[in-house]
Length: 255
Image 1: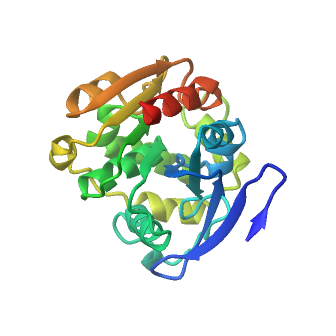
Image 2 (image 1 turned 45 degrees about the vertical axis):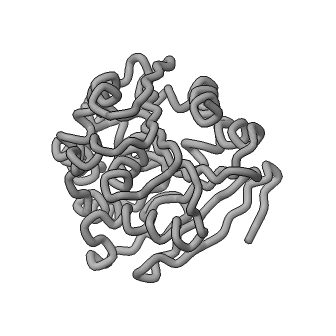
Image 3 (image 1 turned 135 degrees about the horizontal axis):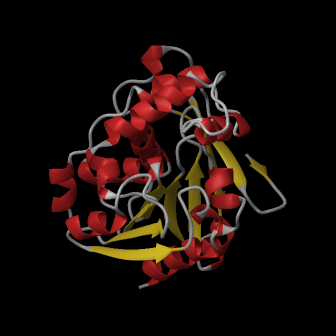
């Protein structure tokens, strides 16, 4: 275990296939498991812009894994390391390994989609957060996945102005292994939306006003049985910089 000057501790946990997952934590109190977005990391989504610190200061133990093939976690090239819905399997293992039986759960973008799949599978947090996610991001993920697969496959040829340029630039900035990322994208299964909408877990749907990358967030909130919608400033890329993201999460958890 290591600690940084910002009071982040990092542990490494081996998942079901031996892949090492880096898990970053800060704060004490009620556990909140937060999952980051595609090509991102716990550092980029939750730590760098102060969200984790502010949530921890409000009285929470903030747990932030780097997803498989992201951040400091392992990025194996063996296709066997990417069975269907491997991120769900990794999250379930973390919940069990960390002994989380009374906790809150949330994520941004891919992290929100993984959270939705966990809810649909029967995981029972006290409250859940779906950030940067709309209804179409759950029901029509195939188109979004194909966009990122194309970005990976064309990463050495896209130029500024190409619709894939920002995704490629972000992937490169984040040091993403393209082979591992490609395998991970192929592991994503469909969300059982019938099971999801049947759940009565209170859900916060929070999204940037100019973010429709994953569809229409208000419609996602409308579809869910017990959801609250909150709009913050920003696009899909810029909304994670907004202090309001942490503010909305804190207010929702405390309510």
